[in-house]
Image (cartoon, rainbow, N blue to C red; front, side, top):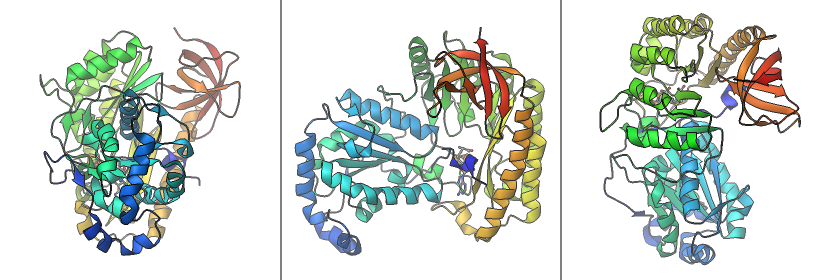
Length: 504
Ligand code: SAH
Ligand code: SF4
């Protein structure tokens, strides 16, 4: 089966390295000591450290100032990374750079990376290999941002000479200075210092003009035993409520219809100034005029409070939709994962959600093949899918990640077993989704139209309150409007319909 769920971009990355507090620039290894470590790599690279300085000067002749330079950003990973890329774009544009659509056209290329799983890390290195030619042709400078940047810093630059600079998540606003100082650097720049305070970025160039991301917190203190996120993103820090409200208000004024509040663990949010909690934040954002739908991601089950559930039920604008990663349905595995809740406690929260909001749509993340997972443990997870009846799941084969506590366990589940379990799990979910989606046929639902389908001229794509994808036909362009769509057909992963009327 095509792994449609896994193919959707959704994963985040890792933790709190010993902080380098105060260090602002860590120059890459100098020629002398760098050459030693780079013997093998040099043979395959035209960008030897020996030639690097003159090469960077060539870049600078082309860059000089960011004014009218073309930039291209490639993003791997979750919505938080997407929002981070929007911030990088905003910063570059505030210095006069302009976006372009292809790597090939870029003078400045930024790759915003994800380290949650092995695959995206491998993808980065293969992409960097392919970019060498473009770099040579355009004299482009290439920067690596995001979790892989934070974790693998000097390794990235040593392993692949296409990269000119590495920028950590707390250093985005330094990108223009970093690019400008490349000519002074012998061998590239690593800028990955940590900052415990919230750093406000005022320039955001958004990809979407209908639904806007608003980051409310960063980092994670949970240290689930399989997860690299706390190591790459650092410890939790929270954005001041007044700044969140300001950004949300700005979006409403620009005509945005939906706001998605983002954080690794939004439930632990509290305002650093007033200590107001997450439900209070939800209430305050709900009062902003103009925005009609509010969502948030991600919620940790152990931190999802009754107060948050009641607020979701009470406030009209908060979508009855929740992503609540369970990871496993087995107490034995949940304990080994360090998740901080039992199967029973998770199901009790689901029960409260369903009684408070009978129309709620739930989604989850699941890892199969965690060390020590027996067939019984696995079928306890399949059973949870049947009990909860999620609208959607994101499922992954366990892979060992550096720095994580689970490295102490033997990765003892054979690849073939992990693969079989993933397929079995996804088949079970496919049947649940198909049944659910069939029940919508003939019904009408409110949909926020996100734009025209690329394949079919009269077709539009939107999302309903449950965050399901709806493809619908309409004679008129409904982009950015709330419409009522009548569902006429479905597959396990989408709903198909026709425009019925404008939503009130
Ligand atoms: N903050 C969110 C998501 C973090 S990462 C949360 O707490 O749920 C996104 C998902 O990637 C996780 O929910 C998990 O299902 C998956 N994941 C993380 N580390 C993994 C690993 N080592 N192997 C496989 N999947 C992993
Ligand atoms: Fe990773 Fe767990 Fe934090 Fe989610 S809560 S980011 S899975 S450590």
